[in-house]
Length: 117
Image (cartoon, rainbow, N blue to C red):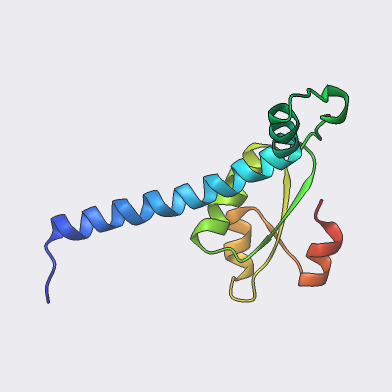
């Protein structure tokens, strides 16, 4: 079976959209947890506004640990650096050169768990 270049281009655009969406969802969930959005939603729905309990944490300067630096992991690392986070990663398949290009620090899995905030 052969595909036209139009079909191939369309599939590439769709895949890129899905990969980007997955990476952005990971960043969005990280921000939601840092700002305690789930707790704020829960308490607000219960008719309370527990403002003093809803102090979030600043993610700038924190260390993000990524397991696997494929397409999604690489985009997450890029976005995290944009938020001025330090990025460490564990991926047994990535080369040191690729890690330098992504501007991430490769570490062992144990080191990742020890360093990541």
